[in-house]
Length: 132
Image (cartoon, rainbow, N blue to C red; front, top):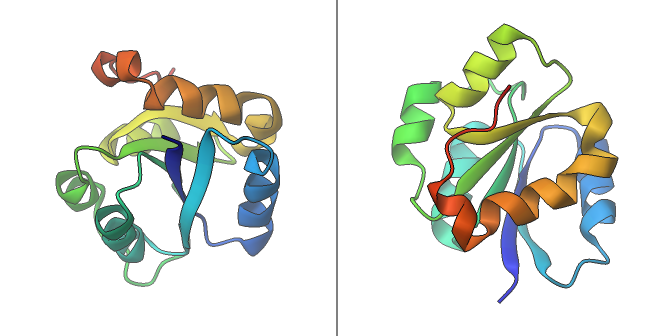
């Protein structure tokens, strides 16, 4: 059964680039896309996403708090946070949203697919966060 991925980024260009990276991977299926946090939560529930690729800095006028997002996230959904920044504040924000991993957008080409496979694997379910 393929890994069900939800893309959440307010940039069409970034979502398109991620879709392109994942296009040739039969074990990964992009099941939906979102441009804001509230819609992302709803799609997680509706689409039963295994991995949510979540841009931490979406410009969202109706932004919900990290605590609210994390508390409403379905247990089967694991967050792979992405950001152009990789500083202490961004790492704390990623943890607040329930992310198990944080990638900077520059490294997506080399680290995205291995990260998805890692956090979606049954053995990855018991790992803590990998935000360093």
